[in-house]
Image 1 (cartoon, chains in turn orange, red):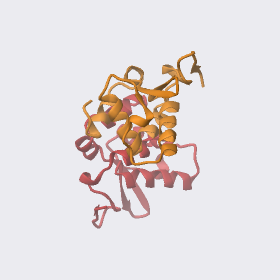
Image 2: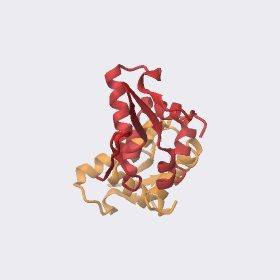
Image 3: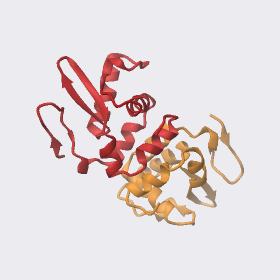
Image 4: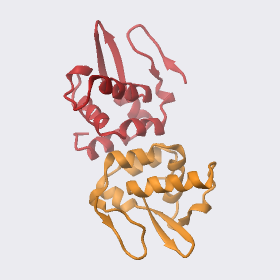
Length: 110
Length: 110
């Protein structure tokens, strides 16, 4: 798999490498859906700890890893904080309408 | 989970019981995406054996079970054949736009 690497970003699949099955799998968990809905609701990059989730820190870290490896989110290291953002443009370009319909189904503003 | 039962149909979740995470999980596999795309392309009910899939019969049976339990397909027993159909109306009612965007992303006509 091709990965994009730069100094600021943690490796992730490039837009053209996003795979539908992997993205759907990443979205197929209630906690990860909550994370994605929360990221969709803001323009800010949010740290892992800023999400109020009913799981342990290590489980939370795992969920963010699944989302990043599937290409749903980008993570950026800033000092000791890992900042997360939704890869909305990449997802919309590769899979038009998918993210919006998932967010709508999850009860979040699309 | 509430199930709909009648003489002709194998038990499945009712429309109102369809869960987004379960549907996304059912769709998050390349073989299951092929099955769904094939069912979306026809009005006919198709038997499990009519799909040309690169998996064993037992794996195929498993994939159909996952799809049925998530509410993506309905299965109907007719003699010795188990006939499958896409629950398009139920999916479109519960999760507007989702199935269409997934089929489009999978390269199938939505």
